[in-house]
Image 1: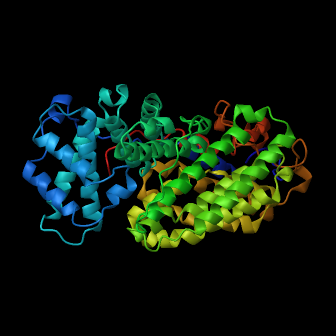
Image 2: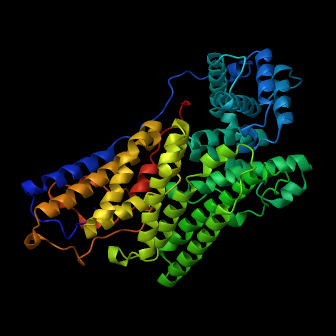
Image 3: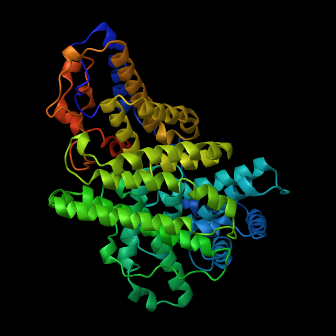
Length: 526
């Protein structure tokens, strides 16, 4: 697929019709429009937002239920405790001075996430589930109205950044990269304006405020770095411009693993950003081969060291240890995906013969990791499967599947074909779990069917006398190049003679970033 393949006959025949059909299906999958998960619900206006959306008695009851046990809410979000939440409630229902839109948005965002946690994890409650869901819908509607307010994007302050950060996590779990970029852009701009990226700023703040601001900044920074490879864009906050220290390790053994996870994934996504900078950016394109090889060696070594540290992390005593396990189980897939992408950049050659064995190995191990992790994730239910789908299709690169596909085609490798089939067989349930990955899933299926049809046609009707090799007799596989115009995949004509070699060379591995970059809009919660 990455080029005109030497195994393909030059004439279109009846025997080749299965291949041509699958090529047409592949084009259709690539062009299939992304679902936009937009809400038809009317949003609140600014005046309505300032009117309490739930009675004070209901909010008091909800807070009492939430306070009965340690909550994931405070582990996942940069919120430092109940004192802040209760102070917001007092300002909403017993205002001494006007409360800002950002603070209102934070308040309803906390309630929305808290109620969701009750619905998902609490076994018993005297409030009926339909009533809880009604409260959740009311809070989400108010939260969504606040996130859409101009004030959050225009005024840099702590509450506005926190409101944006709560929204960032919400869209992250939907796999909505477009909305995440939009929200993170505003939050990052506010952080830089307020100097949250500098240690000197924290030294001039009261200790508790500094602790809150420090944690908030690193959540925004992590979001910024995490989108670099998925979207092919430089980070919104640059590592070299930050001297802020990471949050100090927590002395509470039940919280320490979560703090360590924040620190380690900050490093992981910073490493991803460095992969883009040193191997795939316009800057990297001008580097000599020896610099590229040095970067590949340095980055692959750093990634392997990171993975060893991650695997040594003991979370058995962590709060919500089961959630921790589910949340980070797909890390293995992300690791091999990034490793394959690093090794792919060891050469600028477009020949598949020059792609290193390390790259093929990492790609294969990435797909095998998916096959081993998918069954337990599927058994955990739709929520876990949606999380896994987002990890695999928006937090990891598309490279392993593309590399395995092209290796399969170029070598007529039945083992590769079987791996592609097994992966494709897992995708129906994933596609049902989240529509944010619909295009990626469709392309995976189409790639497998194309490889199957091609290998079957070669075995049933070998035509060595009609084979026309491409320029150097090998299939081409491009570097992941984010800086060119999107390739017109309609050039994949049903007549194999019409396949355009140069264009397809520069399109195959770009496919993942092209799909991810056209994500859905900020949606109503599912």
